[in-house]
Image 1 (cartoon, one colour):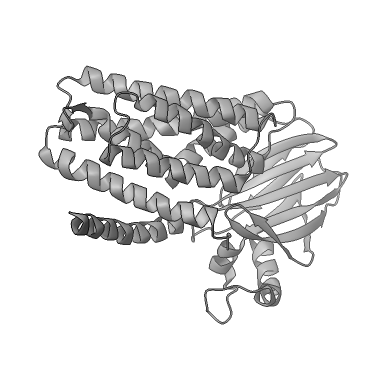
Image 2: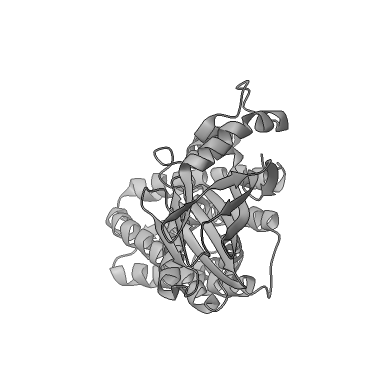
Length: 377
């Protein structure tokens, strides 16, 4: 029995390592643009993750999968050319040449970033700022640029998608409707691209069409109980992460990103193992609520990177939260009909539920080690 269990655990670990490598390759990448307008001048910083810089221009000169400070400095001319080719600034349609200063390195929770101070001088005082952004276009379709734009104390934010089209910002009169839309889209993208949040949700969904009876999983007979289970779970998760997301967004309570990410990974492990060795069966909504509080801090880290614009903080927060719920609802809508149709199949109860949960737990365990022990690269 012990040998068989060890074999299963080893297989799950091997599968999880493959899935981790695959999922990391497809996690949405972000760059960060913090720009400040003063008259006809633009100053600020552009941050591009080192892994994305490698994809864009190839900074690992000796191809040893370790990028050194020397390699980064040697690659600066190539990085500068890439930024100039894929980021264009204009004012009222007139081009504003971009000047890039010596690079530095900034560490974020998901790794190290090339930190590029930039300046740009426009022909006239800036009333409408135009940005043409195409970082990683054709390389990573999930990539986006998170913009914070400040002028005379007024802050705007935006989500830049790699495209050839021009994105314009009215400096004198910010569009609150656009900010709501972009925060909504950011919320949808984050939940659909957040593999860890999705795996936690899957861990809660898998047993939603089953009932625990006499130490065995049995299918629900009618859709009512299954629907009731999932409504409870999703509602609890939504309420919990909305509370901590709001508290963190308004700087009432914040947790260190490394701690938050580690606990989120641990929550996935616990939720998945609970499907294999059931401890909490009829009150999974409590698990969803308890760990939803922690996932809210994870969602807040995205808002911290984007920033909440002054004068529209509540509106932007609402848009982001509704985007998360829309993405979550899309996942539930796709998954629930499938698992409900499979609930009577013995292979679902004996294979899909335990094996899928074991793989999820193993993947999350690898993430837990990476986030809690191994420093980001």
